[in-house]
Image (cartoon, protein in one colour):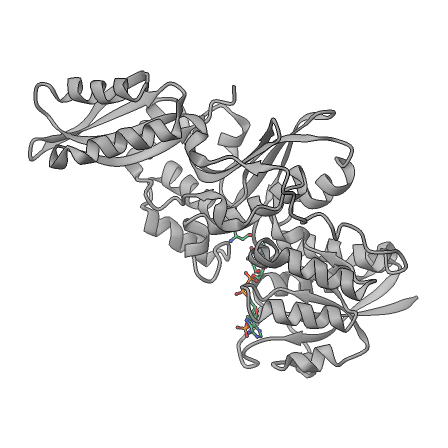
Length: 431
Ligand code: NAP
Ligand code: HSE
């Protein structure tokens, strides 16, 4: 049996998970891949840091050249995160004809085209990135292989474990946002800088990759609408419950009449919908294919072993295909024939929480603004204690254009201190 040496760039959460799986499942991996897969070198920033895995210190290095100049290393597994130096290391590894496996969604979303182009230029190099979307869920292989005969019409997912964990803890235990975030960091779900998770960037990168794979349209990441969960309060969660909804951070992509819709934002969804019951750090992705119909993938989207499972799957996929031409290097190409729908043209139902002066005529004024912008109200409630003459009124609208909602918010804000827009959450009823 041949030996295949891999190098891990990073021995943090995911790197340790990969090392544990390669060690614990050595025999089965050998049988399935046809190779004895050995971790030949590991790159870290700090050699003295305590690690959750017991590795031979002779293979640990802080110098990337020890790996790139080692001709015995045939697969470089990038688990460092961030754009640089990860990108340079990957490009240099490709130049050295080393295959690449990465879990880095930021890198694949922002620089995937460059990575693929380098691989095409060099030739014979496999690039795999299953763990970059939804951790342990084999969604990339699913789309690229099992579903490849379908035209995918829609993809909707909960694809960030940290925010789903936070929203679940806020909903189930009544925790504050800060308390729930601390728990997510302790469990290793959150990125080193949680801004990426809570402000929706992590979800955005993953949606960008999914959009490229599902609709053959690589959208520049900064053109996709993104909103995180930092404005969601316990109050919003309670009111959502009263209306029969739960709040989830959704990634939504679809293709209608050749136009791509892609957006990331907190969304109220019916409490009985399967996605509403995806809790904790679990992820789920619903797809609609023209042949297969509706599908749902569910599993752990973060954490050392679930993410490690996807990475190890990629290493084995490279091992099995060493003698085959690499495939999938064109999937991220720009498709200029398809336009990205402007967010202001997107239609949705909306939840709006306004803090208003509790006085005669306020509701009439609000109604006239909604009427002017052709927004129809489905229901409304008044909530909470009157503070300094102000109170919360919550509106649920029928379907309206984002542009109309934005214009009416501007109109409220122009009326001065009488109206404060506390939060706006889009509603998805899946019909
Ligand atoms: P992490 O715990 O912060 O680990 C990062 C590792 O990379 C550390 O071992 C660190 O070394 C090393 N590293 C970082 N910068 C380096 C540099 N400039 N030179 C050398 N070594 C460097 O991160 P993680 O959670 O494992 O995430 C790794 C990647 O997987 C990211 O792209 C992330 O988005 C992705 N991902 C993570 C999860 C998850 O559940 N955590 C799930 C899916 C995908 P030191 O240990 O010495 O500091
Ligand atoms: N921080 C990410 C999450 C890790 O919470 O989902 C998985 O990509």
